[in-house]
Image: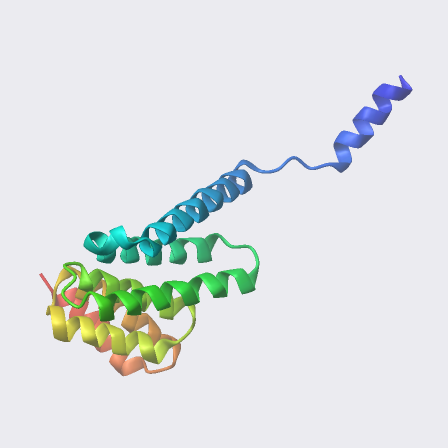
Length: 167
């Protein structure tokens, strides 16, 4: 009886991990493994032909890892790495077929870093270089949100209106 009481008391003090916490930790481990694999591929000389794709995927994973990180400094480091790799891709592979997506990813990273003025600049680059594509529409939503956050209501409303009027 005493042993059973001890086991019961022990189970009350130890909370089982929630499934969502376990899933998030597992997802983080998987993403970190994928990042290391891509970094190794990029470090090898054989990655030249797929450099753009690998850099883009690495930047995407770094953004996703920053969301999953529990420690603020780790999340900031992942965001910084995502920004660096996105900018590196745009410089090293200037004719990358998914450049608009890379710029949009860069805008998302800057938004999470609370660098709102730069979000607007990157989105303006998307509009200028890629026209009013689907990526420009999503970028305009990000820019409108950034403008709203910094208190520039009129430009924000104009961006939202522009998005709503697109067909």
